[in-house]
Image 1 (tube, helix red, strand yellow):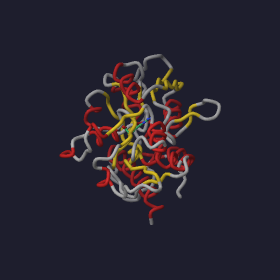
Image 2 (tube, rainbow, N blue to C red; image 1 turned 120 degrees about the vertical axis):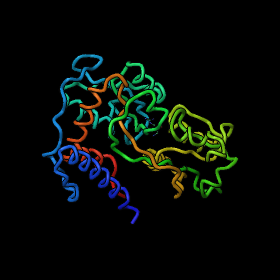
Image 3 (cartoon, protein in one colour; image 1 turned 60 degrees about the horizontal axis):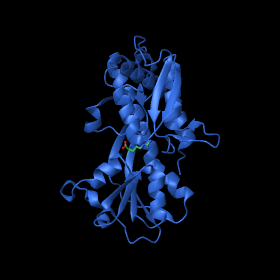
Image 4 (cartoon, protein in one colour; image 1 turned 90 degrees about the vertical axis):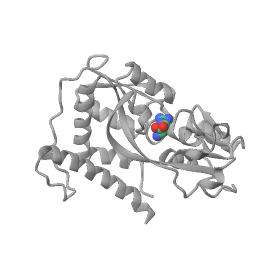
Length: 277
Ligand code: ARG
C-alpha cells in the first residue's frame, strides 16, 4: 500500500491543478482527472525580470532530489528542471545562484533573485516577505536515526539532541517550545546543510535529524547504518517563492507551471528523480 501513497498524492496534486484551471475556464469539468488543456490560461507576457531575458533563481543546492550538483558541478534536480522548463515557457534563460538556504530566501525578498526554488515550504512568516506560486509538491518532515537508536517515535525526541538544517521548517518546528509541539531551542542544532546534520548524527553529536522526506531517503541510502522512523512529523506544501513586488512574474509562473502539469512534463521530471519503491 505504502508505495502507492506518493503516486496518489501526486495524482491529487495534478487533479487539484486541473481543477483550479478548469474553474478559471468555466467549463466546470473537474471530475475526470484528465488534463484539461483547453481551459489553461495563456501565459501572460507583461512581466519583467531583474536582468532582461534571464530568470534568476536563488537556491541552496544541497537538497537532493530537488536541487544538487552532479559530478561535473552542474545543477540538477526536480526544482532545477522545473525552473528550466518554466524559463523556456517564458522565453527566458535560467540563471542559478547557489547559496545558503536562508540567504536564498533573503535574495528573493531583496530582489537579488527573481525567484527562490529550494524545496521551499509555504508558511506564514515567509508569505509575509515573498509571494508563493501555486504549490507543486508535498513534503513531510521525517526523523532520521541510527539503526540501533532507542528513539522509535517523535515522542522519544524529548530531551534528545536534534540536528536540522538552519532556517528550515524542521529547525523551526523542533526549536519551538514544548507547549507548541517543539523540543526547545536548547536541544536543536541548525547545520549549514542537511548532509552536515546527517554527518553529525553519524559522528554521535546529535541523536536524530529532522528533515524533509525525499532528501532523508537520499541521505539514508548513501549512508549505511541509518534509518527513517515511520512516524511523520508534519505535512507541508512546496512552492516557488517570487519577489513580492513582481506579481506579473508570479502570474506568468503560475500559468507556465499549470501547462507543465497539464502536459505531463512536470510528472516526467519528478519520475526522473523519484522512483516509486
Ligand atoms: N522544506 C524545508 C523548508 O522549506 C526545507 C527546505 C530546504 N531546502 C534546501 N534547498 N536546502 O524549510
